[in-house]
Length: 290
Image (cartoon, rainbow, N blue to C red; front, side):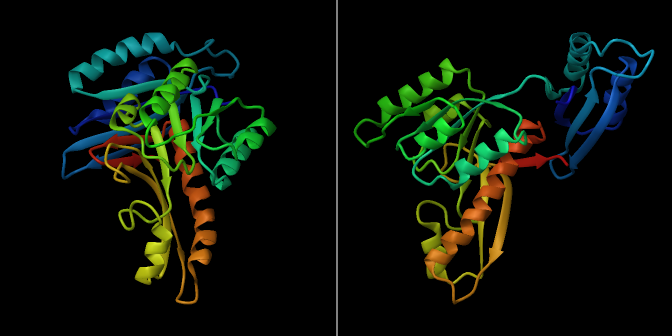
């Protein structure tokens, strides 16, 4: 397991920002292992991600980096420069809930990646409105909660889901082909903390049955998109996308089969980048640091 800290920053752009941040880290004895930044010149915004070692194993080195002391010092700098910022240690594993319905390909892929250590998180619960995923949850020894959703009792179902998320202290919700639309109240509880996969290259073919719509339109490329969920359906900040070339010979079933691979890839990348603290949202866009 990495023993590092990650600082994410966004603020109005101005000269000397990189020097001020790196200088403060140097003053506190940080050994920076990764640093990246981006400027949006049109909006005059600056974005930065810095990662550094918390415990230096070098002989004669100090016992470790005082994260609390640095946090207090950086808070003063952030106020001066009007920064929004997040500071986290890699040792604290985020708590993630997985939601799905009847399609299990994304869920199976995510759980395999989690089991092999690619996704560094805790998964206290899997939630579904169907029971198809229950045996998969049992195989990975993760608690499963069946929460049926009907048009007449959707509010009650969401109340139970939110109670489960609160009970398990969930920080990130992953919709691995969960085929229900979340209410604005639900989404508001987890801003920029619900990741969905949509089986089209957004903004094309939003809503249900996008592969059927793509086939009817005769497109030559199909895609999949991972994005943060907002109140507007399939309109949240895009995290990752990928495409596959098709032809007039491909039928809807072929598009669905090819699309499954794209869905798995873009969703797993989005979840991993979120867990690695590589994403910053602004407006309806994202910065995804290398």
